[in-house]
Image (cartoon, rainbow, N blue to C red; front, side, top):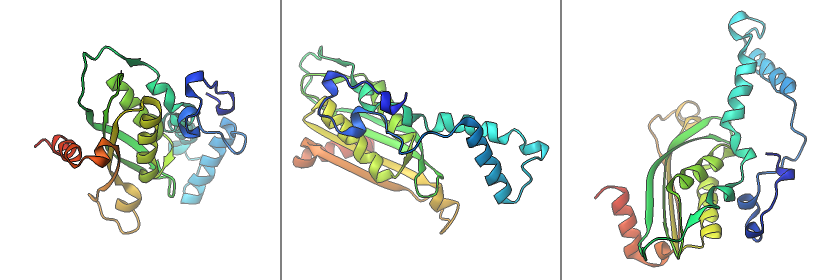
Length: 216
């Protein structure tokens, strides 16, 4: 989806830009040929021969991979939450989906970071399909990111679209820019959280969230 051609639906009015539209590029998107040429330049910069048989098709494969790994730039987060259900039989507790795997890329080094997302929300009168929460995580993950920004974006999308009584988001991830280069500390995990509404204001709700998360 081209961000500049994104159609804003009436119910999306008033949402934050990053929730209601796909990101808008600041410059025209390079052609596939230009992208493949850039990969050949990087191969040469690494010290290899870009015309060598073993890496001859690498530029094509890298560009194919980029189309998949960064698909989030062509997706609208709000669309993941536009299908909700009101038949809840008066359900009055929070919904928790934990251990959602994700893969993203650090915007500082363009190296992968990966881990698990845990999302809870306390609905008002409607709930969203559970798979949509995983799709929301993927939409934001498949962009150049920081873990802190991604955590806040997921929470904001839920807050603005669902208008729940509370939202809790926790991400835990391993960053290869820290484990494979620089200080090189494999196994180190980074944890980020965002709590709002009942999860922020009621300590008992926060304790319940953490207890369910850790399986106690």
